[in-house]
Length: 179
Image 1 (cartoon, rainbow, N blue to C red):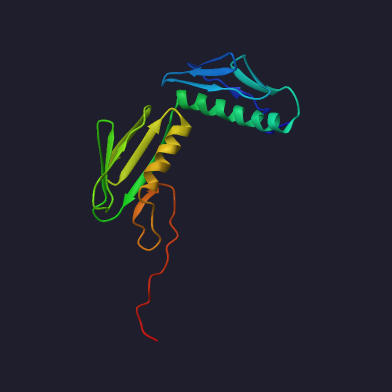
Image 2 (cartoon, rainbow, N blue to C red):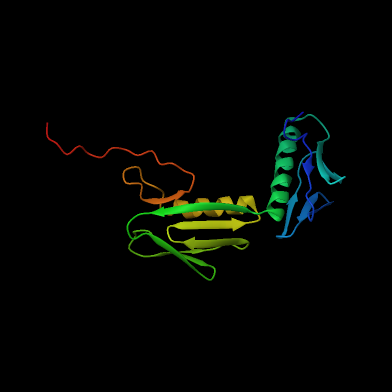
């Protein structure tokens, strides 16, 4: 039995979970998310808990068991609390600002970069810090990774975009002396 898959998911107050035609829909105060189910996995809701079960012990069913339990848990957390990631921009002249649904970034390239903010994602620029928030954990993480990839942190001076909790392993530059 899957250690994660066998655990029931608690449904907090104000969140509604429905299962129809192998589609799990979660509604809460922040929005609505849905997930299609594959494999021999079934989901049932009873007594403010979501229980994920599998019909057989095949390898594919076992792998989907824990996966769908965790995806449903993430959906419930997202519609009740939401998710947030923070990025830090470090470098002379590097800056970001939001205008409408476009994130404008100056990252030391010859032209500024305009990043279209995906639907369901909010970005706040506060000095060198970008805060990405939304109800879908997958979308928040993907958006943060795409923005970070525009100018990843470099190991010598630490310039670039990094996650707030990330530490950059710094390298020593050239010594400059002759032998």
